[in-house]
Amino acid sequence: MIPLCCSCRPQSHLFQVFAKPATTSPRISHPICRNDSRSSATKGSSNAVADRVELGRTGATIIRNAVCTVMSAATLMWNLPEMAVAATPYSQSQTQTGRLQIGLLNGRIRACPLDINPNCVSTSSSNQAYAFPWEIPPSDSATATKKIENAILGTQKNAQIVKVENISDGKRSGKYLVAEVDGFLGRDTLEFLVRDDIVTYRSMANQVRYVYPFTTPLGDFDGQQKHIKTLGDELGWLLPDFDTIR
Image (cartoon, rainbow, N blue to C red):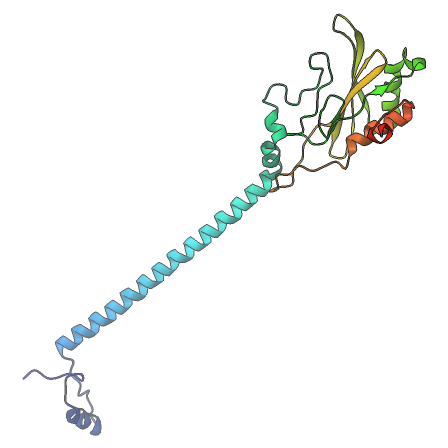
């Protein structure tokens, strides 16, 4: 007869085994039970190892994703100024001929490109960026350009006269003056066309700035209008506006 193991013996036999003292172990492992026990232990051990491996893989994945997220965020923050500048309509417009060029257009001061640069006023604009031209008094007609130049250097911060050149369209002659000055958002460019007894002009910020991720450009708190008003007050010339017309 094949001896029975503890899991196979009847309860009465178990009672007898545990009731009497024994010098040797009365339990005899049944081969089938022993194999099952080892199989269960092996399976449990394998499951534990598999669980540890899976846990390790999960932990490694979490750590890798976290590192990638941190590195991506760091890269974004590092490149943010360049990205913001590269994405602005102003910088994109530099590849579009004539959008924000400095210089006369068909012998006239250019209008403001408000779709790209809202910080601008011009006597050639036909919208909210419009500014009235200056009327030169007869006493200053011969020295008007020089007076504008002196007014710029005397009232504007870090002013630089870029160019002063004679222009002619075959019928009328005049002078074209370009200057750069400090503005609220950086450097601003001022252009003046002195012809006959009228001065037309444009004052415009050189850069358009955005605060990421917003797409509305920053305003310069009427910085361009202030440039023109300050110069007009310095010159003492007639500066008509909508209020005086009314």
